[in-house]
Length: 409
Image (tube, rainbow, N blue to C red; front, top):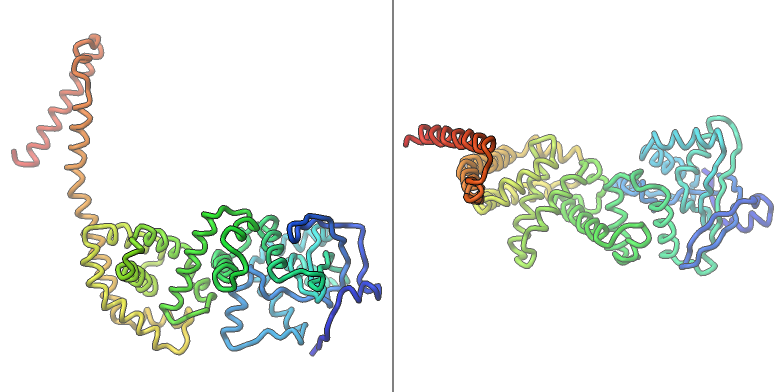
């Protein structure tokens, strides 16, 4: 086991173990933008950031299993988090690794004086992998920031967000990991306001507000299925799309009527917990469009109450909830068939009602269109236009006769 004591990278600079390069990197910290010196740092003195948004749900899974990341064993700590970085986007990592092999590390990272990598975890991983695979001794190039110089945790997180979202391109992130980060820094830890987060991630206030809403729904759904705080479950279930649909449905509900709002939300949570279709996003969308926005809404909510209660109680009785447990509940729960029957029945009735009403609506629109014709202009049509107009009238008369025959008139 490799034990670590208090580490100061600045001490290693004085000992000439860490070397200054000619490069600099421009950073904005505490509202001040300036160029910071870049250093060449042996990788053995560095460790991953366990608050990295890209791997936050993977770390959540690890800790939910009763394990603890122990930095005193830096080698084991780094190996665990390195694998999470690899798994998060192996294709992008391979491309970065190939690029570093060919051209070296072009973009410096950012590390704290204690060795924590704040920006550049993927590049740090690539350097570690190249050293392990090729027997080389590449250094990680980075700016070194010292929290002892007045940097707060909020300053560090603000810089991390700014660099990740301005340069790392959030497309690299799993959407659930992004929601977890938003919930953690805005709602749970209150490090940032919505406005601050938007400013530091190059998003609009409206975009961040929607992310907070969706993230809060994710947390509430996990509580509903007795998986509180187990964000990795949301990632395993690919809940980003379904949560987006639930948010859209609830946005049309009257949140001031708390009882009705909760009634609808719990019905959607229960349906999401025991879906009978593979495409859960479309499944939730259909419930919203063809049931909750339709005439049989109240009938559905009344019939579905027992299922909501059964689903909730079934999950609350489980000691631990994982993707496998959810799959097992979906196999064993008797009320799942009843859920499918109720939902399919209500959707089918809405579709039939819409189809039955379409001829009337279409005829109304046709009459409105005919009534909009200026009759005075008809008499002023030229010969060719009159002939075309007469032909169209003949088509209308023939169509009306067909309607009459079908209608029995």
